[in-house]
Length: 82
Image 1 (cartoon, helix red, strand yellow):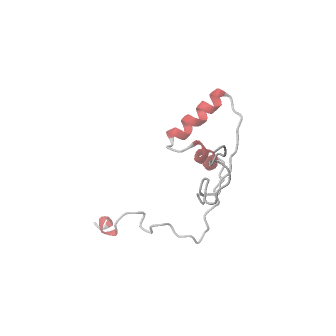
Image 2 (tube, rainbow, N blue to C red):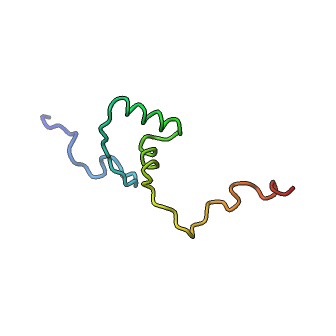
Image 3 (cartoon, rainbow, N blue to C red):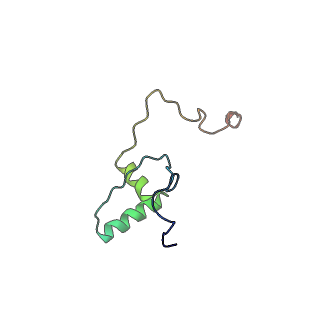
């Protein structure tokens, strides 16, 4: 048995698709800048990626006629009655 039976192409092998469509972006920062970036993201309980996207306003704007998830702001109407 001199042939190895591992590695190479096999149907169904490899990492499965996650369905997310993201791309990798590289930033070149000084150590102090990188530390500041990480600390600011952490202070807002965000990942660095989410923080950068929020600061640069990279999320698409909401449509004017789009309704929020809850019209009451997640407050029961019975709690508002005095």
